[in-house]
Amino acid sequence: MARLAYLGILASLSVTLGGCIDQAATAEKNASANLSDIPQFNSDGELVLPENIDEWVFLGSSIGQRYEDVEFDSGSPGMFQVVRMEPTAYAEYKRTGEFPDGTMFALSFYTAETDVPTNQAGFVMGDSHGIEIHMRSSERFESGSGFFNFGMGDTGQLIPAPNACTTCHAEHAETDMVFTQFYPVIRD
Image 1 (spheres, rainbow, N blue to C red):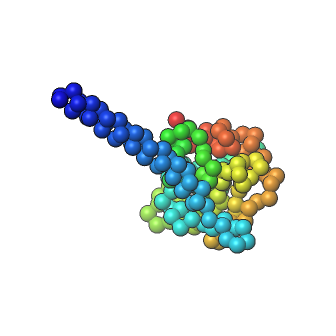
Image 2 (cartoon, rainbow, N blue to C red; image 1 turned 135 degrees about the horizontal axis):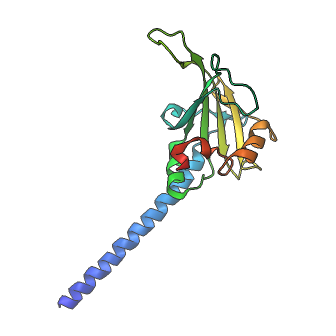
Image 3 (cartoon, rainbow, N blue to C red; image 1 turned 90 degrees about the vertical axis):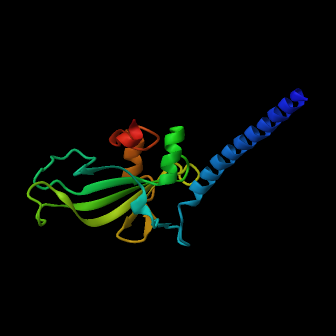
């Protein structure tokens, strides 16, 4: 009798574990499916600016970063650049170490201000000067990456390839056309 009870418990555990494995596989499949549903396009093929972009994962910022060989002027350093990553893609990247199709990075530009009340030295972020989105998608883009310029609008135009963005990212990005070398959050 005890042996039958023991076998019943083992069978029950086996069914439970099998169900957990199925749930995990389904959750992983749904996460990938949900990620590909996140980028939204209008009827003209323009990328619609995600409503929750300010809630995306902060990867890092820079001031005056340039990709061409120019002298840096510390008195007029250029724009602040803030990079964020869509949260579902970030979670998947942290789990797998790969950028899944549909991954989006937002690059926001802000003026560098000094003449702001209470600021005594240094620069603070001023007005927004637009957003660009870098999307990873091997299905959508031949190079695996597409770059959308939003300016100050709610929809972004795809910058036709080849362009300076795809060329630079292909030549200099550390991981899969992404500058992971600049952002410890996804580098380490």
